Amino acid sequence: MSAAKIALQRVYEALPEGREHRFLVDRLWPRGISKERLAGVTWAKEAAPSTALRQWFHANQNDPAHWDEFERRYLAELAANHDAWAPLAEAAHAGPIVLLYGSHDAEHNHAIVLRDFLLKHLPKKRRHA
Picture (cartoon, rainbow, N blue to C red):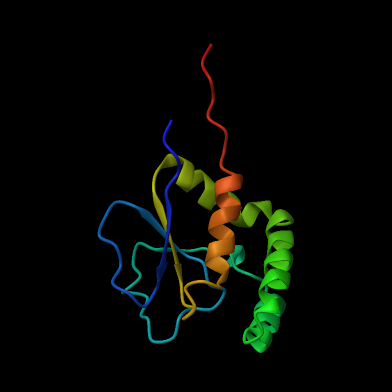
């Protein structure tokens, strides 16, 4: 059994040319990116942190102590919103996916939290008797 592959990539970088299903996981459309450039990308904005949580994090992101609190709050939002992340988990179960995000910080952004959450919540494979 092979492990699911969920890659992370900044939306401003060149998009992968493979067959991976690509999801934009930001609540807001990224500045300066045309809809045409992201043709074929699914915008999963409901899987992104809520507007209130996003604003709280951006107001406090210069304080590293806020990362743990952001992660805790975002995981709670995800746990309460199965319909938002289930399609991403299903896609990751079927094959590799790429989560696209706009943040400049590659080590502290919501896509990391979402990836780890999805890996823990992938659909179970059916066993044949």
